Image (cartoon, rainbow, N blue to C red; front, side, top):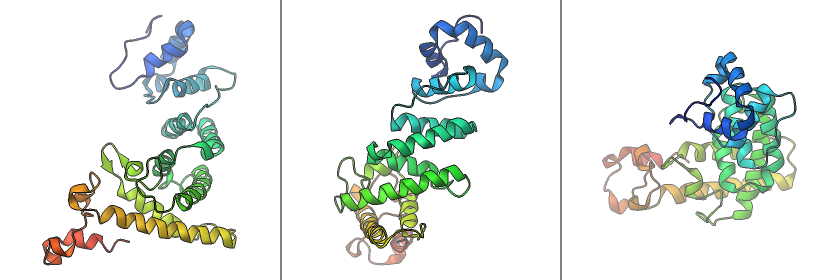
Length: 248
């Protein structure tokens, strides 16, 4: 590697970010990278702040830089889980919990999509999931039936990723809210949870029963597009679509 950073790879911003953060320390850092094949090959997809946290963790004795935003903590969660860095994973979880009340609703959906299938496999994710579900329940109840309102949890944009509607995430959240996952909920909290489930059910109807020409991208390909009686004379004409109506 020498004393100068390599050119930026099209696949990752790791080298450009390394230089941006530690310009005056590149000779020292390049030597460390050469001796650490894992770090050398690590592809850190995220902001320069996320790269900085990873580098400080590996190469410096002082504490890592503070995580300034919910989004940075979310990036760190993904990277530290991918490369199995327990200390940074714990930092990311603590920061996400601390900053959750100030996070955008769409960011909470992104976080839920990352951890909902891992909550019973990784203990620290279960801790984060519990706090997240409570926060999302409160927001769903407060937002009410204002479906597709900009910035709300229950809008098509929140569940759309890479141009495709992630119905499995919506379905997962709906089932999580239906489960009596916290035995210590008081009556008021249980009532709120029931209300949130009802609102979620209405939102699923809202998404599935849209006219075909206004369905979220990717939904029809899953066989979840709604066909009303005037559009088809028999369920056998579109069996997958009619079957989808029994999913909720």
